[in-house]
Length: 26
Image 1 (cartoon, rainbow, N blue to C red):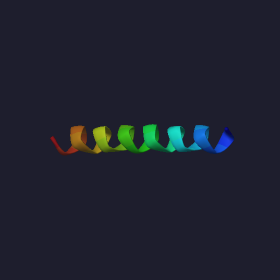
Image 2 (cartoon, one colour):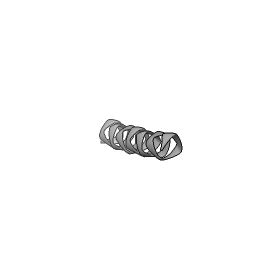
Image 3 (cartoon, one colour):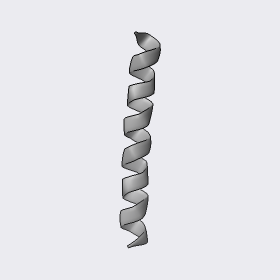
Image 4 (cartoon, rainbow, N blue to C red):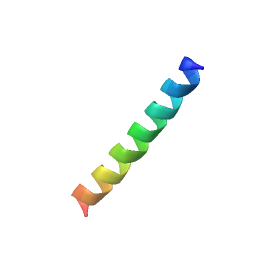
């Protein structure tokens, strides 16, 4: 259960980082 939560948090963090980088580049 904790592993699943960590996986979800990492996925959200990666998605947020990607969106942030795209906004900065543009």
